[in-house]
Amino acid sequence: MNNSEAPFEDETLSRPSIEYLKETLPKRKRVSKELRRRGTLMAYKRALAKFGSDGCTDFAAALTYYAVLAMFPALIALVSLLGVFGQGQETIDTIMSMMEESVPEETMAFIEEPIAQLVNTPAAGLALIIGLAGSLWSASGYVGAFSRVLNQIYQVREGRPVWKLRPILFAITALMLVLVAAAALMLALSGGVAETIFDQIGLGEEALTVWNWIKYPALLVIFVFVLAILYQLTPNVQRAKFQILSLGGITALVVLGVAIMGFGFYLSNFGNYNQTYGSLAGIIMFLLMLWIANLALLFGAELDSEISRSRQLLAGIEAEDNIQLPLSDESGVIKLHEKESKMVREAAELRRDVWQEQARH
Image (cartoon, rainbow, N blue to C red):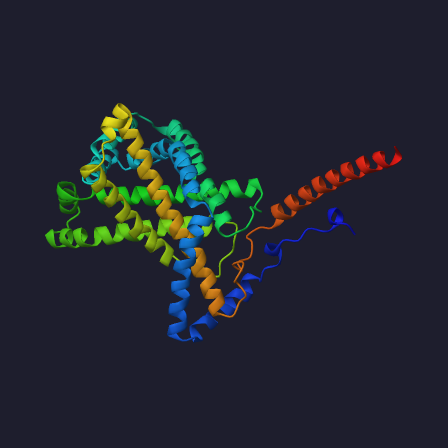
C-alpha cells in the first residue's frame, strides 16, 4: 500500500480516556516532594520555551485584533446589563476613576468618549434584548480566537462541529460578561454609594467596614474564575476536573499586574509617544496594553498546559511528547482527516496519470 492510500494516523484520537486519567492522576501524590518540585520547575522552564516556539507573541497580536473587534460589542452588552440595575453611569464613573491611576492620560481619552456614548444611549424592551444578543454574539469572536490559540498550545485540532461550538462560545462569553458586570457593580458599591445603600437596608458601619475589606479579594476571585473559564472550557480537550485556582491563572494575573504597572512607569518616565504618534498616541498605547495583557494570558495558558504534563509524568503517564488529554469531540477531526486524505489521493492520482502519459510517449 502506498503512502497516499494509507489510513490517517493521529495520536489525539487514541489518547487515554478521561476515566483512566481520573483513576491514574492521584498517583502523583505518592511521589516525593523533591520530584514534585522538579516537576513544577520543569513546567515553568518548558512554558517559557514553548511561549517562544509556539509563536505566542504573534498569537497575542491576533488576539489583540479580535479583542478590539469584540470590545465595543462587549461594552454594549455590559452597559446594558448594568443599566438593568440602574447603576450604569455610576459603575462606569467608578471604573474610569480607578483606571486613571494606572492608565496613561492619552489612552483614557481614547476609551472614555465611546463608553460615555454607550452609557447615554437609551435601550429598553425588545431592543435591549436584541441588542444584547447581537453584542454577545459579536463579543464571542475573542473567545473563539482564544479557543483556537489554546488548541494550538495543547497540540489538538478543533473537532467540535460549528452547531455545537458556537453555542458553547456564546455561553462562555455570556457567563464572563455576567461575572465582569458583577465585578463592576462591586467596584461601584463603594464610598458614599455603599454607605447610602447599607443605611437603606439597615446595615451599620461595621457591615460597611467588612464589605470594604472583602470587596477586593472577592474581585480577585471573580477574575481568577474568568481565567479558569477561558483556560479550561475553550480548548477541545477534556479534563479530569474543573480547577478554578490554577498556577497558570495566578501567574497570568501577577504577570499582567506587573507588566501593566511597568508599562505605565515606562510611559510616565521614558516614553514619548505623543511626539512620535501625535493624536494617535492614545490608540497606540491602548493597543500595546491589550497586546501585553494577551501575552500574560497566553503565558498562563502555556504554564497550565505544562503543569498538566508534569502531573501526568509524575503519575507515570507517557506525556513527554504530547499531553495526554482526550478530545472533547473528535468527529470534526476525523472528517478533517478524511478530507485531507481525499486531497492527497487526488494529488497522487494526478502525478500517476502524468507518469503514465509520459510512459506512453
